[in-house]
Length: 120
Image (cartoon, rainbow, N blue to C red; front, side):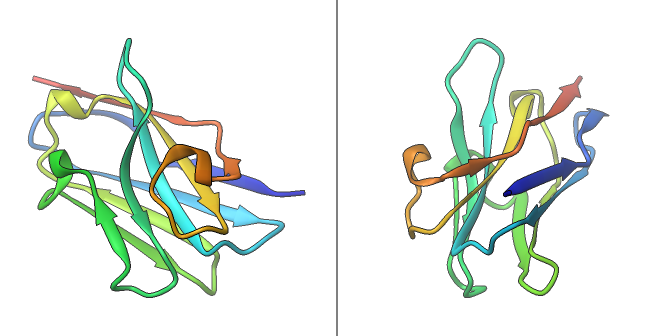
């Protein structure tokens, strides 16, 4: 049975940092990603990473602030979030899939989500 276990969400003031972690068990995945669902809005891609460390993609809103990385041995994906602003608030979901793609439907497995709140 596949499980994605997220950790690291919380509340932080603007300008602060958080690290999100997601450990996958039960399968290995070609792509792992983080999606965010802001309050009252649709879920959107934040960042995605393939097996190759050069195969990473970011939403324009987080470029230069967030870094995604994978540990293939530990089957883990990390999202380091710096210079956070209130617009980064939302529920962050870890997602994993076997297809190299950036749209939500390409990801077969999802974590339960972790709340990130950024206040002024």
